[in-house]
Structures are given as C-alpha cells and as structure tokens.
Length: 617
Image 1: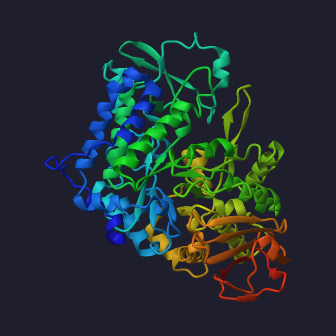
Image 2: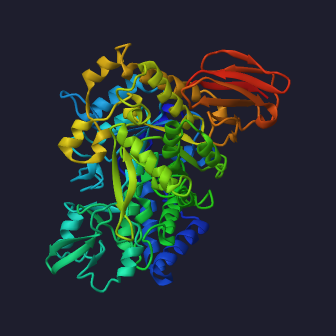
Image 3: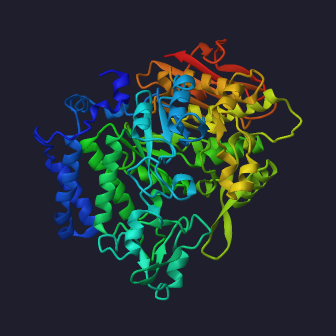
C-alpha cells in the first residue's frame, strides 16, 4: 500500500459489506471490554451492554475493504508515529476566499504551501455549533455547511493524515439531544446530569470540584417536567453528558468509530479530564474517566489499530501524563502541556534552568506512546500544568509580562472563592517579542525560531498552530468585537492577503513561514527525531537549552544546542556529558562542519542561535 493510499479514505467502503464473514471478537478483547463495562456499571449491566459494543465493532468492520484489513494486519504500532510526523493545528475557516468553501480553501492552501513541512492536519471542530468557536457542537455527525461537507474532508485526506476532535464531554444546549431532553423524551432524559435543586448538594462537595472556568457550574433550564439545573463545566451553552447512563457511552463509541470511517487518523479527546462526575470528588481524573478512555483504546486497537487517541488535559504535569496509562492501554499521545509555559518562562527570564530540570525528568513512555509537543494552540498558554514546577510568584510574573506584551489572562475559580490564572491569551510571536521594542525584526524572528526549535527537538511529535506559522501578532480588534480573550489568537485571514504576505520577502509572515518550514523539513529527514529515539537533556549553561537524540538503530546522533539569551555565549561541551565521543560533527541547519577537541566541543553561539549537530556512531 502506498503512502498516499494510507492517507486516503478510499479503503473504507461507502456501504457496509455484510456478505462476508463479520468480525469475530477475540476472547481477550471481549474480556477486556466486559471488565471495563463492569467497572463502570457493574457485572450485570456489563453483560447486558456488551452485545451492543460488539454490534458497533462489527458494523465498523463491515465498512472495511479487504485491502484495508490486510494492511492493518501488518501494522507496526512502534512506528505509529515517526520523524515524518508534524501536525498543523487550524480552524477549517481560518483562511477564507469568498469564491470557495472554507475547507476547499484550506485544502488547496495546505497542499500548495505546507505539504513538505506537515503530514497531518488537526482541523478544529468542523461540526455545526452554537458557541465556543466550534466546541459547543449541535450535531456530532455533520460538517458545518458554512465550512463545507464530508467530501471536502475526504479531499484533504488524500494529501494529509487527519486529527478530529472528539468533543465527548459536552454538547450544545441547541442540539437535538438536549432539546429532546427538555421535551421530556425518555430516550434522552438521563443523557445529562440534572438536579431539581442544589440544596441537597453539600457545600463541601461543591468546593472540591476542579473548575476550569469562572462560569456557573449549574445552568437553569425549563423542561416539560419543570425547572432543572444542568451540569455545565465550561459554559451555559455546553451541557455535560452523563456517562453514568450506558446509552451515552454506547452513542459515543458509535461516533468514535464513525469518525474513523470518515477519515480520522488521530482522535483528540477534548476536555477528557471531566468525562465522569462523582460528587464528593474533584470530578476530574476519576478512575471511571480513565476506564472510558481505556475502553476506547481497546475498541480501536481491535478494529482500527492504526488510529490513535490523544488526550487534551490542561492540568498539572504529573496528572497529565497519567493518561498514558501503563504506556500500552490508554492514550497513544498526550499533550505536553507543561512545555509551552516553561519555554515562555525560559525566554522571558533568559534562563533555561527550570526548563532543563523539568525536561530531564521526561522519560520514554513506551514504544507505541509519546508526547505531543506544542507551544501554542487555538486557546492559550495554560499555566495550571506548571503548578509545582514554577512557583505561584513565577507564574504571576510570567502573566504580568504577557500583559506587558499586549496579551490577556483567563481565570478559573478556586475552592476558596478566589480566582487564579488559568491560561495566558496571546499569540506565540507576541508572547516572545514585545511590540515596539527597540530591536530589529530579524532579531525578533530569530528569538521566535529559537523558541520553536526547542519543541522540535523534544521526544515526541511536534505541533504548530497555524498563526505561529505566519508569525501572527495579537488581534486586539477581534477581542473588542467578540469580547472573548481567546479571540486574540484566532484571526481569520483572507487568502489573497496571506499569499501576498508570503510573497513579500521583507514581511514577518514570509520570513517566519520560510524559516520554520525549513526547520520542520530538516527534522522530518532525520531518524534521530523518531519518537522512540533516545533523549538525554544536558545541563550545560543557564543560557542554553541542549539535548542529545540517538536514533533507534544507534547509528546516528544529534546534539541540539539553542541559545535562549540575547547575548553571545561561549560554550565548552564535555564529551563526558554528551555520553560518547565523536570528532566530526555537522550542523544540519547551516551545513557548517565542526571538529571536536579531545575532551569537548567548543561552540560560540550568537543571540538565539540554533545548532543541530549531527554525527555518526
């Protein structure tokens, strides 16, 4: 099967083929599924609901072509992700052309400009929605007609792998499901978490609940059976689903497999932290939540083994990495949420000590699970993930510097009634560079690229939000119009204006796009950047961040050294710290050859220099 065909939706049949023998669930898979259902609902319910899970798996299998079945039988999970993987994060309508559907415009632009740098597109929720820029979904199974249709998604898949959002925690208050609940339809009555009153809920229980927002936890709605209070973790328009009802879980399994048939290679479990609600707990990171994700993993491993789960859990690092499970039974990829804030702090303070210390603790998860290394996204830079890594004072100072750079701060509610920063809303370019500073454009771009290079050398898969690829600055006007702090980093751009900027050799957009794409292109050609390649972080100097990567076959090594300071740094790197001796090195970015001394490598780094020194072992 060719590379192009593995990206294509062609291997799923439009109509299921029930004439061939259907999928036979192996006994060990059946046992795992029943055990997880029993953990969630008890042994009796597990036996009652297992046949429905098996039915859904068989339906999915019936949509597979013989070619796909054969290919999946030879799939090697150790190469689920490779050095070739790089993910572009984008909205479906962030680039617009009035004469074409937004998804058509995106497909043509990415194919023409970005295919050499990225092999995967994360198209943020492209379903009909009522608010939260796509995350209050009205219909999980339709493409928003304002963006395009499923044919447009399939057209993109002919050139790129795709990441879909599984927004499985909540649904729009305007959705048919919720409207049927309000109408008293018994099929949907228990799809949501509702109370007639909160008077019986202990204040102590309410204080325990982990809150990612300052909005009310409960929202009032009038139903056919009277006024009820519904659980709304994120906003009054986003109604949490009730996974204590097995029907909800069955429906979401169905949608999970539907996304696979529609072209998803990776499914991002949005807000996975909050899937299961249990009063008397934080209602976050519960064992039931982990079991649901593990159940999704068992099902996908059985009927769609190349498809991966990634968890989006904007929480402290130690809790975040728990979503790997044992490395083989939960998410295959986890957002490396502590990385953005630590890189930003590093460049703000011009001191790599905290980043180096934390990075030294990162270990390989397993040979089929890894980190998603990103610096910015459609949201903001979360600060909760660095609690315990940075002090409260350091986080506060980081936030104040973001304000100085024209950014904003989003807050969350604390159990004691106070508020604390939750995320920093700012474009990455503006976070790293202060507008109006007395320094050249080239220096600011060099600083920006140095920060991006750190995320590219880390063990895992790199992700880049599309506005970073363009070197976008804060969109203060959008914040005033839309009255939402996240709008500062969500500017919609016209295709002709974007192409004009990309053809202007003096523009920030041209320079950033060209240089960042070249870094990504170089990265994709080197075996040392395979997610399973060994990583060793070096503590050399507070002015640099440095890491050694060694290829899986132990034949190649790369020493990355990045100056995070606006100053020249003279550096001696002892072979003893590197872990091996090599006399000849070549910087794969500049082509410059460097010969080591008997005991060390001598480097002089100008402000924000990046060295990726390669050698053979």
